[in-house]
Image (cartoon, one colour):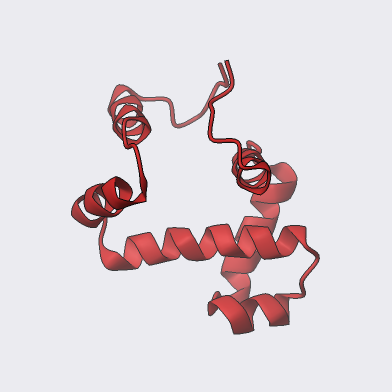
Length: 103
């Protein structure tokens, strides 16, 4: 198990709730209730920024396509380089089509 600075029982419960969702429709239903539209769009934007950074797109290309600020792009890049590798894990699984959790 990965140690996280965020480790907390309430966050554990949130992640357990996400893990019981079975399809995109259920994700839309849950996330529409739990997040504001702005929060959800910001998370989706950051994931797209990470994906584009991994394909060596420039900040200009990323900003134009996603609408992300250079500060957001820099933060995502910092996470890709020095973070917990969460973006890398998810992007690799999306690329390979693997939806199974590691055991």
